[in-house]
Length: 234
Image (tube, rainbow, N blue to C red; front, side, top):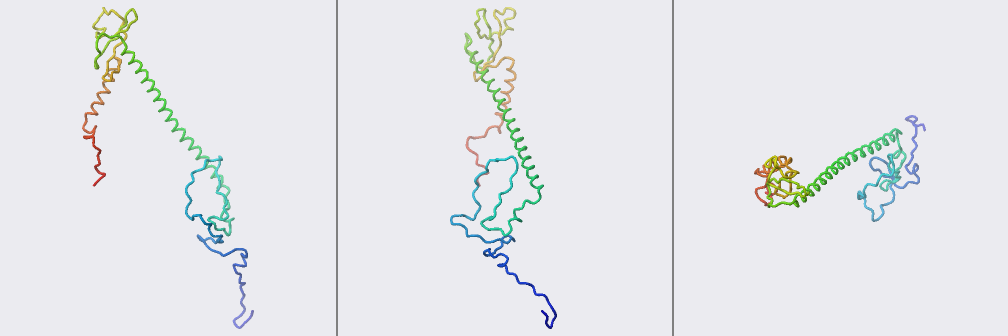
């Protein structure tokens, strides 16, 4: 239209109702235009839902988040721009990451189970040795002996021609060449009434000595049996 100030173009006035004739009232959230949906249903809380636990994986590869047209009860104006996949290489990287995580988890579990298996094997060996020592100690206590056995002494085991075994306090060295019976071995009776073979006496005494030194130190045992609350109260 021409007037005294010249000719100027008229801009068409387009209302939002013309663009979205079916949309109800508009609102914004986080800088993104959204269409306000229905009010929240009664009994539903707007807070974060409680943790329901992690469901076991059902597939080998990674998975994308499910499409939600109305997140939080609000319908998106442009769901395509919000949920579009983007670069196809992202899906490949996601699958590779999930596969790598599976491999690392399997390797970690294998390492831990290997350590546990070694510990179980070691405990089995210790249990077998305990049973063998207990059987040997019981047999030695039932060996014939004419004296009362006292802990701390060494006793020598002999065997007669009849097959009977017996304990004696006389060593083969003291018998010399006149030893009347076959010598089977020497054992030391410990204070817990267990028997230690003669060749293991020195090693066993060294362990007992180390334990005695640890127990004799002032810091090894608490000065009293009362519980210590130092530092816990004013």
